[in-house]
Image (cartoon, rainbow, N blue to C red; front, side):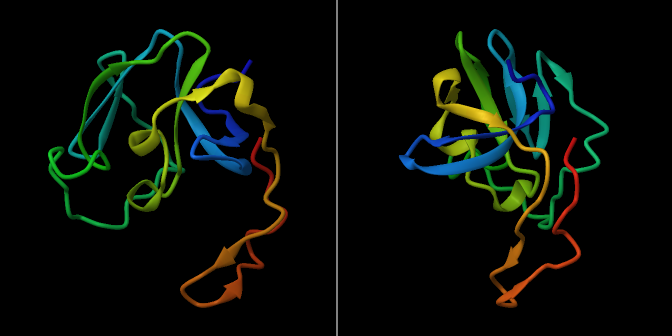
Length: 132
């Protein structure tokens, strides 16, 4: 059973034929809230996420997007709330909701491919990095 902090591979909720990979930030029964890019799980600020990257100083109001501000929600039974580590540029549970336990294929353990679409090139320095 995946736990907070695990990086999981799962069927993309908007197209189950595609595998997606994200980090579990909350599990069933937890509450999740985002206030000005700060993640709160069970009303406690999540700190020490050295892997979480924020590249933009802009904070988008919640009425326009859930990227930076998300009202408190509770994670249902057998579901997970996941987020990408590149928090300003990740399509994740903030936008399409929870990941169902049945959709989880496993835990990621190594970066086997890394592509920089902006520079149209392989990020060789990331390939082979262990995630565990």
